Length: 115
Image 1 (cartoon, rainbow, N blue to C red):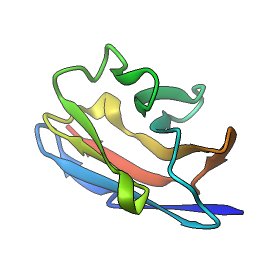
Image 2 (cartoon, helix red, strand yellow):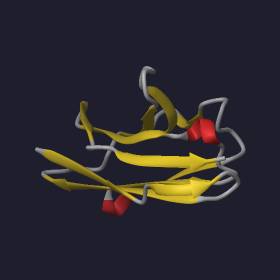
Image 3 (cartoon, rainbow, N blue to C red):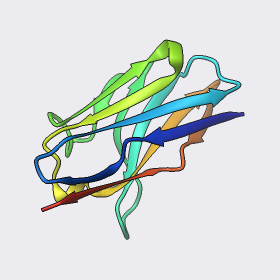
């Protein structure tokens, strides 16, 4: 079983920065991919960024140029550096990991951007 634990969320003013972290623990091998999703109130969960062994790094158009995903493979940790934050980035951010072709989710961390 794999557990994903996020940290780093919080309240920030528009234009500010936050860095999210997600660490995998349990019976883990090297992740096939790790990603960040987000879900705003009354909206569907959407992909923010992904780092895959097969597909490389990809971003949602809405965050390109502002967010950066990175992985520390030896520690099965993924980060999301968020710069130039906007109020519309407000959401619960979820870590997602694919280990041995099974998908796991973290519990989510709240990011709130004030205008």
